[in-house]
Length: 144
Image (cartoon, rainbow, N blue to C red; front, side):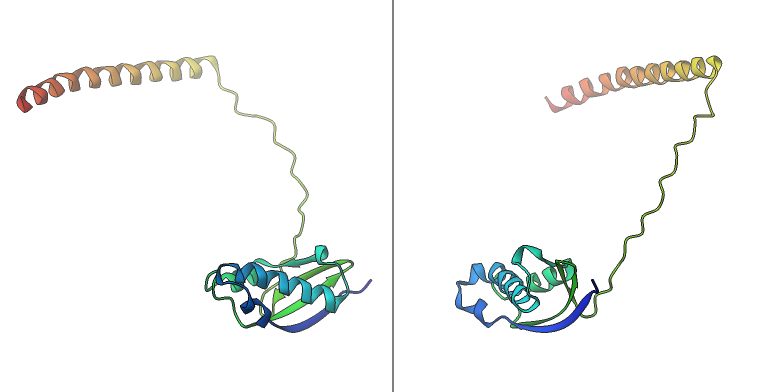
């Protein structure tokens, strides 16, 4: 089936009949109902792009736009609503690469050297803690 593209300017005047904190959710419902009616699909098959959603939410929940211009593409049973100037990105699946085998296996000497380094670092940290302890006691004595 061929893809159908249409451009609609959707009036959102019905949205302003509901209380302010419910206007943007109502606007989204109105847009989905409008597109479902005009493109002859069910509401469940209407999808809004992130750009359309952010345009509606741009001024907050209380002040949606009065009208919105949307380009609609019908792909099978699925409707996708985008802004007119929004670019369509097609996903290209790349073949997955096989994991490479591990080539750099360490020798026993390297492993022992790493263990010695870790032990030395731990000793240095212990010495620093011991050296810092008298300073803390001196500070406590000065505060008294």
